Amino acid sequence: MSDELDRIRREMHAVLQPPGVRPDDSLQITRRTFIHRSLLFGAASVGQTFAWWPLLNTIDVAHAAEAPFKFAWISDTHLYERSLNTRFVDKVVRAVQEVQAMDPPADFLIFGGDLAQLGKIEELELGVELLKDLKIKKYYIPGEHDWYLDMGKKWGELFGQPNWTFDHKGVRFIGLDTVSRGPDYWTAKKMTPEERMGHMATLDGTVAGAWAGVGREQLDWMQKTLADWDKSKPIVIFSHNPLYEYYPPWNFWVRDWREVNDVLKPYTKVTNIHGHVHQVLYNEIGSMRSIGMLATSWPWPYAPEGVPKLTKPMIRVDPGDHFDGVGWETVNVNADDKVDVEYIMWGRKEVFVQTPEDHDKSIEEVIRPRIADNQYPWANP
Amino acid sequence: MINTSTFLCILRRSTVAGAIVAAAVVVGPASANKDPVTPKQLKLYQEAFMEEVRKGDLLFHGDAAMAEQLGVKLSTTGWACAMCHPMASDTHPHAFPKFQQSMAKFATLRDMINWCIEKPNQGEKIDPESEAMKALEAYITWSNTGSVLVPGKY
Image (cartoon, rainbow over all chains, first blue to last red; front, side, top):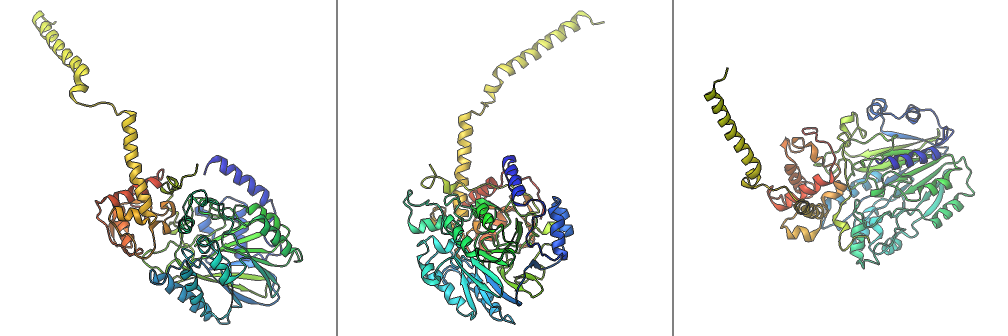
């Protein structure tokens, strides 16, 4: 990271995370949150971080719920047509069966985006067909892979409005669309819809640019939606992308995350649950906690920089086992003011690394953006 | 004491040796046929390298036209290398050769590339000496420029 970028990040952090400001003032001091706090007050080295993390498979988030309940999250299925890739289909089937088998059942399912890989009608319809076996109420937010072939037309026909809100047992839930407001990188270059989708579907591509964002109009909608909500009551916000800056080259952020934070600042119990990153992530920005979820399709490596200090990384996966490093999640909202997010990673008892060597960044790497997509005819002027 | 004949002998030898050194200095580079590398040549070498990087970048990202041009089938599942390795992340070219658990052998980067083509991608293994392999290797190492060599590190 350049010194300049480092300086900017430090300044931002100082503004967003002034001394004493943390999510959820009424937080119980559990073992895990105690450790979070200790990390906040000292730049722990990787070694120290690993030495201090407890062996827990859940992330504790405090809430004040009226009654205990749980819901499930599935995202990033990245379905191709069935004839091309059956492995991704098998994994969705497995996740659906497991969510359906939850006892007591989940109150609802959140689908966190990237149902399809290339936004094709057949891919989106395959997703609907596979999720049909799940009988509980389902809510969907879009991912960029669902959107940029036909600019959300088919997705809208299947699932309706991409952003929404509802209240459930004392918690206000909000679903955001963080994908549809990408800059127009296709018109001037006369791209076909398939070419537009191809660039968008390449995580490390340089052509689609900083496409992830909430947008002024949706921020205003969010502000209005929260206007009648008690500042101390819990809010859970679902988004495809993380609502903070982790690694912009892969759009592991929303570009207007500062504005999002401005809207959420007055509320003390905000939890953001997001997909897109295909990895275990945990962060705190101002009064918001942020939790990254697994994909069912495949895991991404951690970015070379920007991984939040508060994240305990997931294990390094076995690339020969396509059920490794992926899965789904349950979110338990308990009566004792706690929410546990549990990662269901198939074939793993321990989701988190146990030793520094087991982290995919245990070998330091320096990487750079690709070049082949930034030459004729896609080069930016 | 050095007598006159010894002195003349030393002088003669020194003169011969001096003449050889002088000749080597004057005609040496020409007779060894070595010219300094010109900036123009350096540019050409770099361009030749970057052309392979470009090809490797396209292969790595599942470009069908480049795969066809080089006569390879790297995947049959829609999956491309870059889907697990954005910006060639987590390929660790600087750690090879090393014992690779997934293959249960001491492996090179080329072995690893072929393993990924065959297993996760379900494509067809490529000739380790082929242009496609060298291009993939060029892209992966180029993208990891600046990473420190840690051979053998798992």
